[in-house]
Image (cartoon, rainbow, N blue to C red; front, side, top):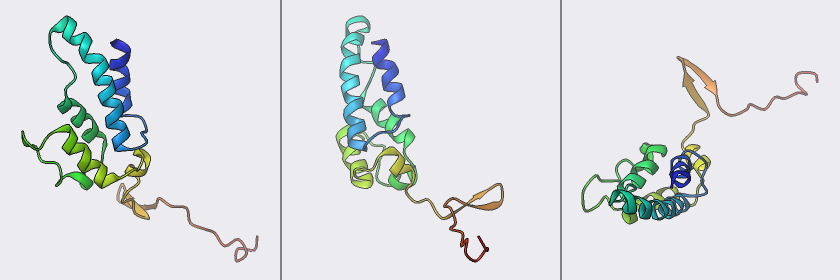
Amino acid sequence: MKTATRKLMRLVDGDFQSVEALFGELEALKHSINPYSQKYLKRDVVSDDLLILMVLGVLPSGFFGAQIVLDTTLFQIVDVEAKLSGIFGSKSKRGIMGMGLSVTSKVAGQLHRTNPVEVNNVANGK
């Protein structure tokens, strides 16, 4: 149970292939942890709500904020997973985090390019 719990905590922080794959792995870990917690604590320690919150915590909320409603009937793992999969498709975590990045970003009041600029070496005499 200890190993599965560690893996659960690390899973969302690492790169994942897609939101759907992430939910699948999280649910598999939930099903391996909860039988032990039922045996010793007489309750589930990993809930669907926890899994949803873990996933939402690592995704950029600007893309899903209006789609996810904190309501007892709408905040279900199948609904949230379907909405997030619809928004992010088959993008990996890296692909999701790269969505919406602009050519420049403002850091400490100065503009910095996030994409490399091609240099015309011929014009520079090289």
